[in-house]
Length: 613
Image (cartoon, rainbow, N blue to C red; front, side, top):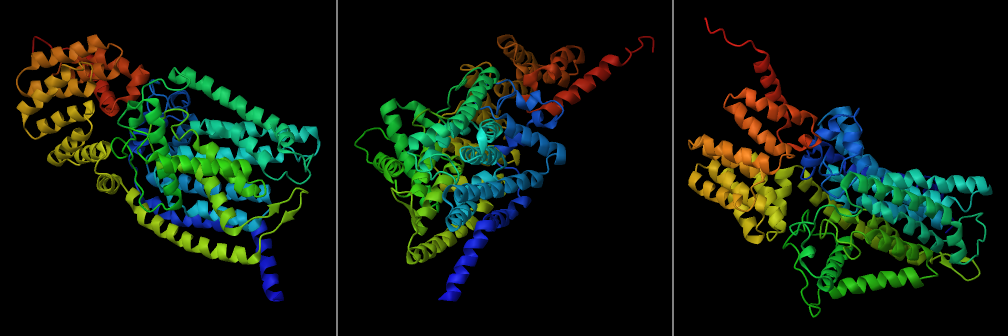
């Protein structure tokens, strides 16, 4: 018995000093295979084909531009994440291993920060260690860590947890100067979180939740009610709120709107097709899916777009009920579990951090994404550890009653079994993210009703030079959702297969709807030129420029076509100005633009032929 108590004391002491180490090591170990993975999915747009990150000495390119477009025509604004990609590019160009290594390090860092936060808040070494371990291995994080653009979630979570740590330390600091110093330390942490991803705007509300946790040792009013603790946290909350305001001001300056400057695509978030009552009911149904993904993440998907999730069209549809019940249960714990501070704080943290992603407050760019659970899962892992292991019960007199040893032993066995299941699922799902081929093949099999899944696989097949298979995938997806870009791409594939009459029919039908579509105009011009109608091809390209003279893509299409005909004197005035136009960085043919301009300049500098020779 004495030896057992001595062992328990040793374990407790070790976890108190180095309890973060197992989680950090395990997090790094299970994601080491990603060092051999390539870029996948949105990585190609944000990193591989993004010239903005290739100029570290020109910060305006990545700090003063929106997430998807340099010209600021989309709503997402994540400058610090983009800056991290610029640093990655400066260090290793487009070698994927360096980008994946940074993601692994950030995930391991977040595990350590969660451990530190739990240990500081509840002074329970085992609880903190287990919460960090669960966070390290949970397979819901695979998309975030293995997909390089998940860096936004990783950085936002690091800043969020750092902000909570600084805010928690402020009330217990000796003297007003140190309390203000800790409160002001929230500023850079909040900036890291919010300017990495917009979900960090919930940090002020999360700081308020610290009033539900036991006050730190040495804090004034240790037995004070939460209202007085909240007042002590007010400077830290104010610092975080100031960064939120600054973020929205910067976002408005860059994107043109405080919230959204472009409409949400129904393909990505079909909730925009519903009226508000049904939209909320569908969002509640999605919340139930999120809850299942946290508890039993054994059927993950990289895609939940149009038709992947059946919308709720009537309150009699019971799909929304589990989600509503889940919200009510978590809210009840956050409000009324006064004797279980860790569980109460965890429930509040889960609710607050999930609020933006839930589509209940605002309609975001996607109906569902497992990556959106990365930050909320910190609350879930902490709450799961508190439920399984028990925690010190708070009494009205401020005394803490430790959980029974038997309760902790049984809880530890249950967590160990569940943890092994999580590790097994992680090992099964991680290789899906090796490259686009494995990812899109898995996605089509996992969600065959998703139009986005078929479109993604079609574009991959197109890049691999398989137009017949790409056409079949495009048609499959188009039957689910009639997307304009996919329709044009069907014509492109038909042209590549030599079925020019069918391709021309598609292009002409598409032009009747949208004469400004750059890819459409270019494809139609190529088809007409090949068919012996260069005059009409030129007319289409010039009309596109006339309709949208500010479009770099329209001018590039005309300039490239003229260059292909050897008409350099006409081509160069169209192409050369594009090098100084911000939107030109979004051209898929930027390398071709530079090559054509250099060739045009050589032709312009060449002496005219001697007529006497």
